Length: 633
Image 1 (cartoon, rainbow, N blue to C red):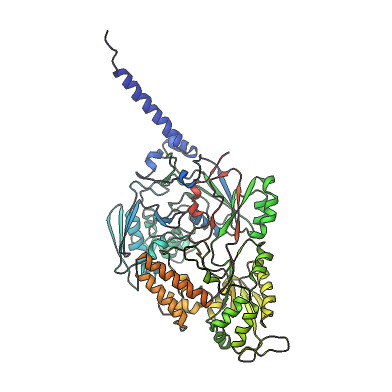
Image 2 (tube, rainbow, N blue to C red; image 1 turned 135 degrees about the vertical axis):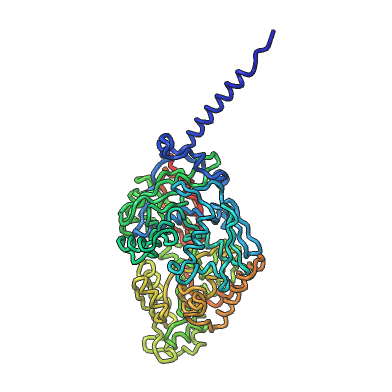
């Protein structure tokens, strides 16, 4: 008996496999986009993704694979806060991972040679949110037509591109490769690309070249600019090109969600980017959530509205003192409260102004004994218990205890010891007092200190009231002077401020590869030495050169770190700088690791129970990949 042929069965099996594959692919397609795919207005997902998309290893991070759909509501207090969607979306050429190391994201891969040559490889088939190819030409357009255009960047490309004044040579060997090369190491380059407000070194050429006089008529562009409220083509171009501010819904994007509404508005809707480059392990295209809705309300109302269940994910504009109120609404309004750890070196810190124009005060605060005395006079335990329910970590302004760089000696001047504080002040010659018990300065003035605040938080006022009482015990009278943030900053920069209060170090969990620039005078907005920081920022064109030995030592160490690539040597420099910074008490930390309330809807999944809530390096929710959050309803 002849056996039946297997050929018909093989054809049937192939047909079934094709049909099953078609159904499977259809199941992978986000339902929100299915109709557009069916009508031909949008290519199928297989054609929208890069050939090698980034696969998010969700299960390895202890999260669950999600499902498509839903609108995530958030509340913001200012219209400009919509830029936070770039921070939260955290789509970067390279980005920080959960271990705070750098990894390729938009890039398929990158290579760093001797710390001075950076080879970027793009993903083949990657597209902007409007479906146009994302290639090295978008990097070329930014570098040649924007960053090096005198009308758009009168002072040349951003500072990150300069290494001791030298700009890189930039090459574009093919559509998928970009190379930046300096003669010296540039350790800041990748970190800037991974930052909350990233250095955008690419722009959608296909969209923006129509607003650029190299590709369009200049007179026509100026006329168009005037009709739209801009003075000339360059101002109009920059308005159109704001990848961070998100004020132009027509601007193509590489973020997971894309703004659809022009300001001004009270509600902004960000819809899923159909060409986003990430997928989960089951090849579902991310983000899971279809859209994010941001409602703009008064910042003072955000805790109440959050407690009423009007936000699905909220951290901004919430403080620890909102916790009790929010807890009351948990069951009633279907959310849970998480307490994440803030990442500042100090939640609040006092900044004695070493660049004050008041000579007597300046001479006093430049003596380390005086700064140590002030620190010893702060009753951190009392502040922690009264204001932070005892949940914070009483500390100087330094790295967290969980940091690899932490040492107990960093807290030498963070204990409460008014007796030693008084002895230090006496040794400075401040042993004479007036009838009110206040110490007298060298010019016979009573030691009365005005502490300036940005006037944005009653929390600062509450802290300063407690510090007022403890400083009186060492013969110093404190006054608080609130003002608007811009006025506050200008007064510090001009030298008119004796002392101010602000947050501490931005990143209290650093790695050796992250710049220790916060510990040295590198920025004007370092309120203890703004003029020294300005000197560095402007390459000596403004401000003053540091003339305090310990500060010069910090700056020299920072420069050494910038010029070496060996990780162990960089670690040693970090440790040396932290030791000097804390021992010299250039500012006075009070507490750190203050819990940050994060309110999460009961139906929102994959939000970590524990997290680090900070601008840098975590970009608030950013490194936890909100594109992998999903609703289970």
